[in-house]
Structure formats: C-alpha cells, structure tokens
Length: 124
Image (cartoon, rainbow, N blue to C red; front, side, top):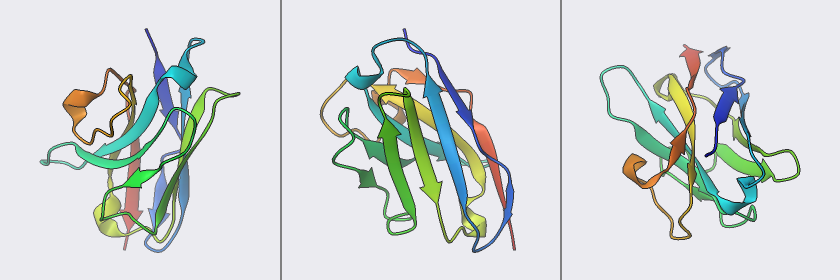
C-alpha cells in the first residue's frame, strides 16, 4: 500500500511557474515508477509526465514537453513536477500516481495508487 499526498498547487499568471510535490508513505517508494496526470473540468484525466524508479527516463506528454520537468528524490519519498511557461490550458487538478510496472504507461488505468489531487489555476 502506498499513500500519496500532493501539494504546491495554486494560482499563477500565464507565463509563470509552479512546483508540485507528491510525498509518498511507506518504504517501497523506489519500487514504483511515478507519474503525473491532470484533469480539467469536463475532460478526461490525461497523462502529463512519468519517471522511472531510479529517476531516469523521464517521459512527457507533447503538450508539456520543454516546459515541465519531472524529478524524484527517493531519499525523501517525493516526486516533483516543475512547471514553467504555464498556459491557461494547463489549468487543472493535478494528480500523482504510482505504478509497479517497468514499461512506460500513459493511461490512468495502468497506475496502482493515486493522490487526492492539487488544483492549479492559471490566469491570463
């Protein structure tokens, strides 16, 4: 069992930056690849980024590539999402998720544990 708690969301102007954090409970954090997803009102949950167990092989959705950076610190059981050059279309609830699989998965069904989400609002 892994419990995930996101933090760091908030209100920012377009062009600004935010850093999200996701703290995991338990001693098996490094056994999971970690992903970030987001869900805007009226839309399906969509993949944002993923990082492997060791912190390598970051993988991004095309919509955020070059603007967002995923990282993790296994000594702190935490995964981060650094978001730069934010756009109004980045406004959503952001979720972190844990996946026991090695193969890159970009669909929500492929992840085993989820956080409760944190709201990001980007104003124009």
